[in-house]
Length: 265
Image 1 (spheres, rainbow, N blue to C red):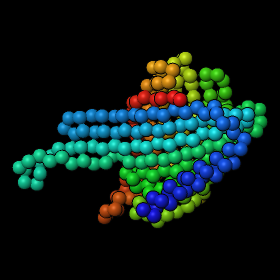
Image 2: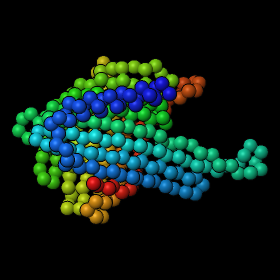
Image 3: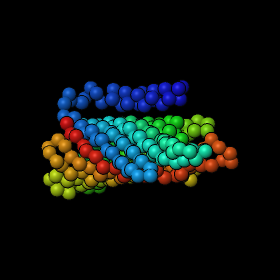
Image 4: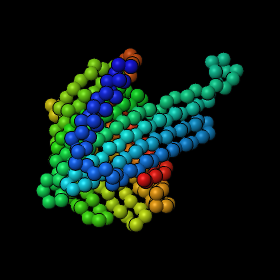
């Protein structure tokens, strides 16, 4: 419970600190917000269920850009097998995904309409991957390599600090390097593609790193409602160990593919 509260406190403090810096200059409207709910199902000899939902809000004014996001992911597998005496069938349920996170980023354009300073804060917990908490603060520089009406491509780089607690391991803090790129392509008036990639190595131990990637295709049904297909991947080069002997480590890669709806308001 103490770790859980600490994780939430760090996330709230980071979000509040950045919000306070820009709140005085930000206008009271013009937020663009979208919420999504995605679902994956399978049935037969085993039943698989995964759901994730998230919300993203973006605000742009003058030379400022502010974005905030949060997400929740949950998955469960149900299998049926004989009991120990082989006299009946029993169901067993395994949690395959259980994570949540939040993030905040503020960009300040400083030359032309392409280069900007940024401050980014992220907080995440992933019980299945053995991440009790991971909190990252990363200032840096960004640049729009392409900034057109239907196509945006930007790159970001800078240092950061990570506060991390993996299950069965002591808490540690370290300096990281953050390299990232992001693409938004309006394929047509009703269809869009979003792609993001982020690489965060420990500066004094490059073999310890986390890489996050996502691709989403979205197609409008109405002005406010759209269908989406989303592929997400998280790769951790040094995963948390299981609480077993001999020591066994979790898999390095977590990949999810879901389909769902996005509501814009």
